[in-house]
Image 1 (cartoon, helix red, strand yellow):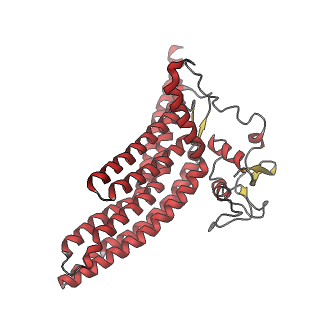
Image 2 (cartoon, one colour):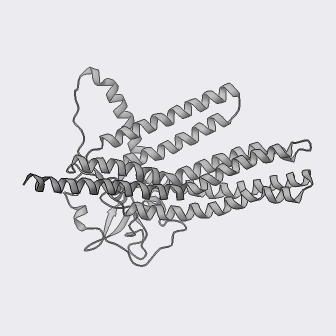
Image 3 (tube, one colour):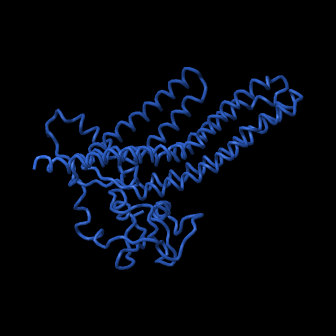
Length: 370
């Protein structure tokens, strides 16, 4: 990725920036990934920074299926690339001790550094695109499976009404797919314009560590379930959970993706708001990833749960019930990005209310003392 240069629109005109440098700016929150100020063809067409980084990571000269525009919508202050561009970033927490007793700490720190090098902003942006593609394809397959199951069930029950009833959830699932795709666009916009700051990477690293350990535990549990039951669902579930945990950890390692800046000058109160805001934005940013991979997983389970319906002596009614249960879960997953969007607005409204009350009380205190 470092060999690819990207043209970025700064306040004093376009400048060429190394892709690795631009990714570092995004990771530290100095540049917003949703800004449409990047170009891979020298400025003839402009795309968002996130799209440019994803294309650069894939080694392509232009992102696929992305409508380009002939002029950037925004610009970045030129001081961002100055020698002091990273002056507001946290330099790291000093070590408590360098003695032998810190060996386990060094092992964990090494594990985090390896994960940080792999789980970058480009990893997340590319992974989110793959997840959305997988989710959309999986929904189409699930809807088709649901219609086939409804048709076979209707024929076996000799009831056209049973067929129509079985088609309700597949049709609703296709509508839910539209809702999910529209909600993802809204998620990108609201995150791009909702910024916050944290004082140190310490909390973010701890979040990442907890997430990665949880993912590894889920994978190990899935292997154990597969060994005990001699069936595949356990390990597949564990793999999907672990992959989702990688994307969640990437958001912690690259807080700039969720427009969170690491700045050692912020106050404790601002950091409290920043951490709570970061958690809300992380959950919102992760919604499309969970939708995509979990939808693909449930569609796989739907196939295995219903493949026996074509058999002559299969209990079609029971299989229809199992299909309806999984289709209902898929519908909830399709609605999840929109539900997460609404929940996020309520979450941030609460934070804004608490912050305003605190601000009023802080202003009133000196007046009362006077």
